[in-house]
Length: 136
Image (cartoon, rainbow, N blue to C red; front, side, top):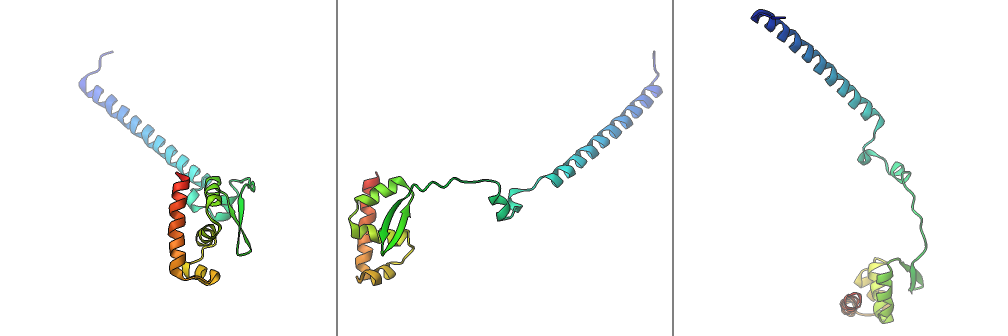
């Protein structure tokens, strides 16, 4: 079947119109699907903390080494750090535990141990140097 130029243009226009309708319908379907997806899904950053906590569970095995400082039990869960702390002298270990595990300041430790703050600072620096060597 032979078509003249005018009939070919009519067929092309009808085909273009059909394609535009189909693409418009697909775009609407896509937007509808996005809306349905937004209604079903929640972004993690928008979740409340209690909802985040419900998403997972952790087994808490008490595998900590406990050190006694000022009559308090201080848990150290990292085995590598725990082994290094055990090799320190008691006084230096206590100062490190008070500083980093009990969140005490050098001044507070000096008051508790009845020492000068500069002595605490010296012991802290020396202890950290020793720990670095032990953990290498």
